[in-house]
Image 1 (cartoon, rainbow, N blue to C red):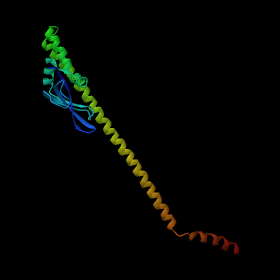
Image 2: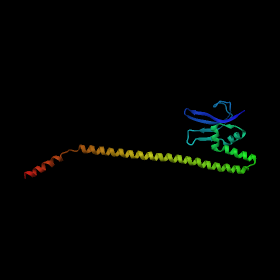
Image 3: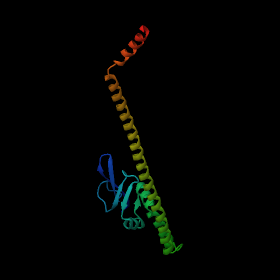
Image 4: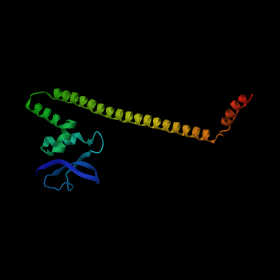
Length: 177
């Protein structure tokens, strides 16, 4: 029986989530499966890939063929690299301890890279929020200044214009004297 590791869709319209399953290749996409390995959520940034790596490794070593998308996920999480190292151990090219140390080194570097991306994304998000807050503050200050000007203009318009008449009568009185 040809066995595939593939995705089974679930979730609502335009917000799909996927189960990573091991299924007979003749079974429908969302139909019967042998074992559920985990989940994949492409809606988050970076995409969330949660599955039992030991079970996935066991299935890959037993000959289950991953689909292209699942193959990319297995490569991203290091399962295919681990398989490559295990084949080297089986052929006698390297020892198990060397394979384990190489895999652990690779995994640590990958985790650091993923964490760096998460940190960068959160930093960009906080910078965007600060910029938006600063722009909003500037707009509010401009509005407040416009309201102050409008209130001052209204106060000037409400004052009487009597002092202007007194200024014209004074020079006339001086001419008569």
